[in-house]
Length: 298
Length: 269
Image (tube, rainbow over all chains, first blue to last red; front, side, top):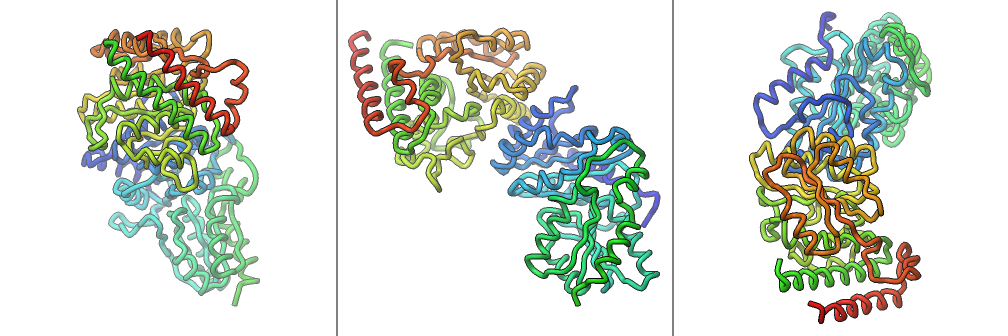
């Protein structure tokens, strides 16, 4: 892991610049003054009706998917249009803004829409590759959560084995499955290192595709380990924990714990302070692993 | 428009009206008044203004129609069937399970270019289509019909401001207005739209308004079309029934009244 890595939004914007250059059937609505996001959403639908892939990104407003939920649902998701939405989910500015700008329900809102792809890359490289995959997605809408917070690189500059609907096994163990997404992947890797000293070998899965959910990767892992901890910067309800728990209880029940923001809103602070406040730390993952490991399925 | 053409359009409108009554009657569905109010507007657009190609419906240079007002779906379907986009038999399964003709317009239906149903959302979708046509260098127009209730929605005004800012001159918005005072006209003008007015149930008036539209003007166009409150030659007493499913007797009564009204009007032409 390279500690001087770029944030995932950097990989996204690099990929967008290349896609724009290629000019291959992809459209970006014009930059506009003001915050008329409902109109931008409808414009994207109108543009996509011509058959092109449309990218809509919001750098400052992670809440737009909530404000425009009706437009996304009625005018983009139901007609299954090729519109890729993305928002900067966290970063120093948003951390300072407090609860109103800390959108911890986005996976849930977007997962609920039939046909909507939901992605959450953990670093710049995976965001770059996944953005290119979105540009060539043959149909349907997608949502990608990005981060503006500088984080370590998880992947090398040539790594390109990321697909919509798949996940990456970053470390292989047989003691516990840690399934993480976005900024929590680096915390999961730190937790893995801490667990080694306690004799527990962890599988760490970078689950960058929340929907379609990579069931086979998760199930193959929990069949070996017999227990699972899910880590995400999201409400406990409706996000990666829900997706993983739905899959595990249907196919191969094992004890599962959630490291998430639980059922509460955020507040203003620095990124560091908020991680502690929410309990989104590698220590919290280790704590949950010890609980779940003690009652693992053997 | 000469008298003969006007007579033809009125005959088409009468048949469309009868189909709408039958469709809603068979389906046991509501919404007769809002569907009927827009019949002349739709007939005029599809038969006099829009270039559409039922035999080649994806043709890139076709004019587009955005059904902002979802409630006009039955009238739109009746028009599309009569234009030859699909078999008229489809009308009788309108809004049934598995039917091609959904309660609100769906882009999987032949001839439907844009989804309907999001209140006030039609204007923004139509704007996006205008942008798409400009990017592709296609000179087609995009027509959108909304009613004066939808135009009160917040997102409609984001879109109205955006369309004027971007000089979407190939956008034609028809406001199906049944309210007494039309605040929409003044507001649209203030936002930089080219606004005209017409009586929405009168082909001559619609013709006049469209002839006066200056197609070289880069401002988006709006036509405030005043329609009869229920678009329907019925007594006030009958109107109470219009919001609920119609009885068989009522449907028969409506159909014969429509026929009779057409016969009565005949000698005046």
